[in-house]
Image (cartoon, rainbow, N blue to C red; front, side, top):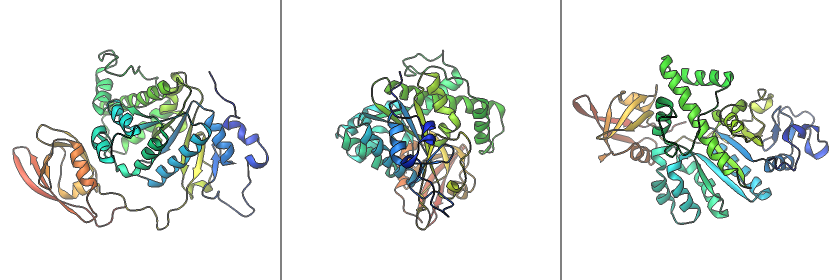
Length: 381
């Protein structure tokens, strides 16, 4: 049932006066802090927030490693919370298994370090938690429930490879098979797949199936949370919500039609109209003084758990890992003299490194064990 009390976003373009401030004479680009409707038309913050607060689900896209994207998400959450205090925040970053840790965090039972350990943050996400902690503290301060939207990589692989009927509903958290993707989304996924320099058709189909499972899992969790009276806001990578594909498509299949997808937009991009249908609204970011801050250290490998350490599944071109000499199939036994039992341990160790650090690695390749030295650049961007 629709809860809409304010004009839908498409109707905002028809509002006069304060709802649609024109750009000042001679101003070519929207100023930082300006909201834009999906077609690039300026919209007041008040009108935009009221329209969003009347939805069932609002999706906030991000580029995961952009601090300014997460600041925008936090500010948007604060605005929505002011209008609709009954709020739930959904997180792509963590799987269903992490829900008890999220509940304990909101209840104030865990320190930051305890939460990162209990949630398996580094094992599941591996990105700098400092990017997300302000949002997590906001939720705890206001008693806003946090909901794990994802499922483990292992379950995604099983669903994509073994099929839905092979896995009991309880083991897949009641997630139903995804709706078939629109042709445009399939093309987008094929493009993303090609960026990894992979061409195998069988691998491509598994990749697409895994992405659909990912989208369906998040949509299912969002739809479940939306069954009550709360406004549900999902935080996720931008590829999952653009053009009405991905999660919006799966939400619609689950019967959630009062939904909107919002994206941040860089100042330079805001000078041109956004691509048609990309998102329902955009927020114009400010240009950071001196550019984006240095990125945290990255080894540049795809890793998984192994019997005696962590197994290297892929090495990024131009990465520290490639320069170190790591190869697919290598097993990293220890780092800085510490034996590794999980991928999360290596991710946590690298997260704490300072720029310019040398990291000793003990690596097994075939029957031989060798010492390697990973050299992290003094400044990473």
